[in-house]
Length: 491
Image (cartoon, rainbow, N blue to C red; front, side):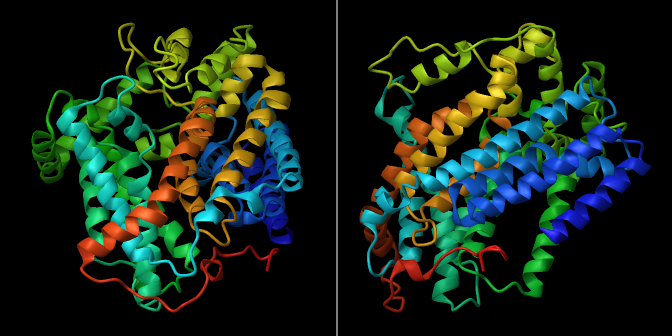
């Protein structure tokens, strides 16, 4: 905490030099301190709640505010309601800290379903291969048979977490099998390659970057000793993420109506004709500026930086709500009703979404555009629903339901690796999937994790052994001997 206090104090001074409002800087200082306190109280990455706090604080607030300081701009510039925004974030972190304390009191990890499926020895490599095989099978079943509402393929796609879990387990297996000398093997290389192919062909930042997060989570879980090659690889990935992935994803509109082979040819063309790609990205940024989107920074910072800066879209929704445009509990009621299976509730409605909110505000969408996804954080939607009540009671209720249910399903993350999948899932859903992301995971996410745990422990090792032709026999020891890194305060 002493180091955090020093950093927050220095950052406060930097913001004042850059003419950020005093109250904004003071509230952000409080947000930083509260975030670190809550993270450590939760138990760091050894708890689901700790992982949530990390992604919540970093990707909704900290990254964007830090980048504003890096480019020398006042953090509260180009916003409609900067003080209200940072007040909402800080108040939400207070409530998240209280929820974390409550979650520790009602700890369901010892009763976790995941612990009941553990074995004395676990072949991570074989299980990782098996998960990837199941993931491929579900993907190709979708291609071959299509999805019918309420059908088996549609249901499997909604709970298909096997691919990401396969990459995590494969990474852990590679590290364990090699005694820490390698962090990849042929299984994970193929998996990363196919994920990369899908990401590039879909022009999706999420699909291109998620495999990297899977590798990082698996490496941290196994306490991989970082070497120079890992540092070089990290630098290369950062450069590619901001220099290539960001630009490519901004050109997604060029791929509309194309199949996968045509999309790959388009990617090759744009990569080899960089001036064409740069010109299209510039046109895209100018169009967004004309529509009032992404104007938090004085100059465009690229789609990846702006995607990781959730304050601008939140600010627009908060400012719109403050004028009296509150939705009430209707969105939350619809989200919960939609978790019922299709055969129980065939007339599901999907009225509320980021796209709908953007249309309500006139936020950069044409009148007939009902498909473009617009991201808002759960803080902004909670305020849009119930005003300050959304911060002080709605968010805490959903948080305690989420943390308790996931703890019950995955069990103790120190002993079992299932929760690592949730950590990866949080990286995308926590900052930009409204309240819907958490409510959806309460039902389909937990059910998918349950199926994945059963599949990983009972089915995937058999599939892995069949395709590998042999089994890797690690030293006989309990799975509980392998666990994630502890924070300094926990050590």
